[in-house]
Length: 124
Image 1 (spheres, helix red, strand yellow):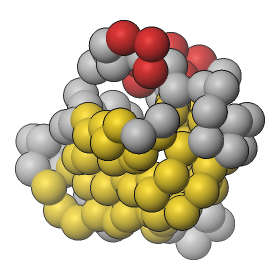
Image 2: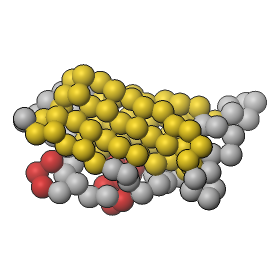
Image 3: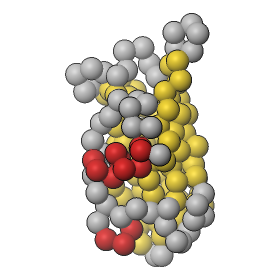
Image 4: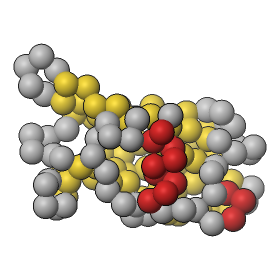
């Protein structure tokens, strides 16, 4: 999906782990009564196991100010595996931002973020 490329373009990860974890789904679901839910997936595109994976995502208003957020965690993410993410967006939220992304692989502890904000559903 296009969201992986869009995310990588926002904040490239340096070295051989550049494409190890990537946002592989970015979907905005509009509900009949006006609510909105964001669904995403964080996928391990690397060759090795990622452990202690943690992602923190913020909801942003139209001025880029934080107005809430949520987090996802998984102890082990095998190559090709994914962490499903889902949250209702607060009224007035127009953007999302990955505040932090942390994981351990091959004995290295990696931490990235914050990433550039995007409009939910625009990249996928």
